[in-house]
Structures are given as C-alpha cells and as structure tokens.
Amino acid sequence: MKFIKYFHSATGWLAIALFLRLGSGILLLPLMLRYVPENQLGLWYVFLSVGNAAVMIDLGFSKTAIRSVSALWAGAGQLTAQGVVLADRAMPNYGGVRDLLAAMRLLYLLMALVVALYLIIADYFLIPWGAVSDLTPNSPRFAWYVYAAGQVVTAYTRWQIPVLSGIGKMRLSQQYVAASTVIYLGTAAFLLVIGYELLGIAIGQLVQIVLGRILFANALKRFVPVSLTRISLSKLFSIVSTIWPNTWRHGCMILSGTLVASTNTLIVANQLGLEQASRFGLSQQLFGLLEQLAGILVAAKIADLTALQVQGKLDAMRRMVLPRLSASWLLFSVGAFVIILIGPSILHLLDSKTSLLTPAALQLFAAERFFQFNQNQHVRLVVTTNRIPFLTGYIVSMLLVPPLAWLGASYAGIMGLIAANFIVQWLYNNPVSAFHAANDLGFGVMEYYRAAIMSLAEKFGRLKSMCTVVL
Image (cartoon, rainbow, N blue to C red; front, side, top):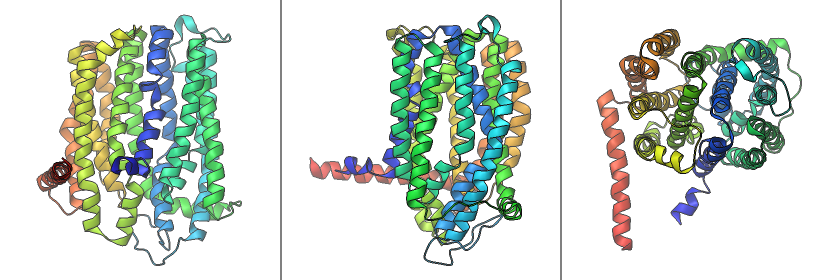
C-alpha cells in the first residue's frame, strides 16, 4: 500500500518523469547504440553539449522563479532581493504572481531570440562537421537544424514548468513531462528502426517539446487564476531588479556547470576524436541519469522546503531534508557500482557500436561525479533561503576547469581531463557548499553529516521493525 501511495505522490511522479525524460539513457540508448554509427553518436553528444550551453541564457531565472512563485503562493506580500520574508496572509498573493509571470514571459521571448542567434553561430564555429557536413534529408546537419528548432521553442517556454512546481502542482507537472516523453521515445524509436538515425532522435525531441508546452499552457490557465496582460517596462524593471541579485548568481552557477560539461565534450571531440567523444558522452549520459535519479529525493521537496522557510519551521525542515539527503548518497553509490561493474557487459549484449570509458577512467569519473552530485544537493538546499553564498566556487570552476581539462587531455588523454575536474571539486566546491547547507539547518559540518546518516539509519530501523511485525 505504501509503495502504491508513493507513486501517487510528487516524488513518485518526479521519479517516473525523470526516468522517462532521460529515457535516451536507458530506454532509447540500446537502439541508438545499434542503429547510429559511432562517429554520428559522437556528433550527437556534441549537439547536446552545444544545446545545453544554450541553457546559460536563462541566467538562473527559472531557478529563482520556483522560489519566488512558491513564496508568493504561500502568502508572502512581496519578493525580496535577499533572505526570506514570512507570510503575511493566508491566501496566495495573486497580484504578485500575475506581475511575475508577465515579466517572465517577456524575458523568455527575448532569451529565445538570443538562443536562435547562438545556435546559428555554433553551426559554423563549434560543431566539427568534417566529412558529414552535407545538408541532405536524413543527414546529421539536417538533424542539427531540427534539434536547434526544438531548443529555441524550449528557450521561450522554459518558464512554464517552474510556475506549476511553485504553486504546488509538482505531481501534475511531472505527469505532463512523463506523457510528452513517452511520445518522444515512441517517435524516436520508430524512426531509428526504419533508418532515420540522428534525424529520428531530433524529430522525436521536437514533437515532445511542442506537446509538452501545449499541456503546460493549458494547465496554467486552469490553476493560476490570473490574466497575463502586457507589462510595462517600468514594472518589468522593478521585478527584475528585485530578483536579480540571486538570479545572476544562479546564472553564474548554471554558466559554470554547463560551460564545464559542454567544454569537456568539445575538448574530447576535438582533441581525442569523435569515437572517444562517443565513449565519454555515453559515460557522462549514464552518470547524468544516475545523478538526477538520486537527486529527486531532495528535488521533489524544494517547493515544500521553501514554504517551510517562509513559515520559519526549522525542525520540520530537518525532518524533511536529512533522511532524503543521505538516501540520495546511498542511491548514487549503488548506481555507480552497477555502471562500473555491469555496464560494459550490457553494452556487449546489446551489440553496441560504442563502449564506455576504460575501467580506470570510469572509476575516476564516478568519483568526480559523486563530488559534483554532493555539491548540487547542498546547493539545492541553500538556495531555498534566497541566498547564494558560494558563488566563488562556481567562478573558480568556470575559469580553472576548461584550461586545466585542455592541458590534461593534451598530456594525459581522457584521464587528464577527468582529473582536472576531480581536483577542483575535491579541494574547494564540496567543502564550501556542505558548510553553508549545514549552517542553514543549525549544524556544524560533521554534525550535519552525522545527523543525515543517523536519520537514514532510523528510517531503516523503522522499516526493519515493520517487516519483523509483518513476518
């Protein structure tokens, strides 16, 4: 009964939607490995890196939007540049929500235009076309244009998902994501089997994006009882200036993470070849799936955590966060062992045209990704307080990792590139983010880790007791 109840919750649907949204990592990947040549698969990972870099234009507005909408929906009278304002009413601040959404819609239209320009430039200067530059139906370049069109649509409509999450409709938003992703997987799988290669994947993504945005637009009309009218430039400036102090910090965080990930793939593709880029991209894709799957335990409660911040309920925050945090570490660790030990054998059974990294490189990569995952979990917690106190670490990563990765790849191949990322994570980013997360919950760092582990042990103890009673 509890298992069934779990999958009627926001957390359960977030897990389902995440698994399906990243279905190319599990469900679609066998077909990609069988039907897409290795050099084209390497090119697809370059597409993804270039497309992911387009997310940087968001500048952190979507992340700030979840917290801002949650605060206004919880009754906050106004938005603040820093910190949390306690609720001063028992109902949503509809006027504040209306103005915020109108501002976001205009901002994201401007962002979409910038993304379109960026992708045109990337077509000529960032993608190593080589011998596959011909523009014919079913060619990699035509697939790129279809993929790019989807990225422009996404850039314009990116604000819709945070709004539904912010008003407490996380489960519904994830149901919509799951439905559109099923359509994507079915479309892409069919087109791959009949020989459309990269174009099949790109068409599937475009169909998913358009369908998803239609569903979200209808949901906003149903659940947000405000009319989105034109907003004056003065009102737009007022709203942006209020949320900008944390938005630009979010933007730097997104810029750092996306730039580092995208640069790593481009370095591998240009220095070590598309075949090695295919192996690196596949490994990165599997660990990306694992990170997001393990991270849903915390991510699903961000809107609720923001509401608790507004209401000043520290004990409730601790009870919500600590067991979920430690469970996410355990889930990531188990998943990493599965990828390292079983992943190569599964690829062999699938008759894959590409492979994972070498065992030594894959183990080092798993360690680096765990540190990155741990940092991301702490960042999720801290930003609910409407503060971003660890910006320096992201700037350091953005400035140091790309040149260090380039040098590492030049002198030590793929191991050197991974080591450059690992060192920066281990020496600085993780300790700083953990300190701030612990402090916000009223703990020292060691007390924080100990409390998280003990909270999970208590959960297991209760589960063991329940099983004993049942048996």
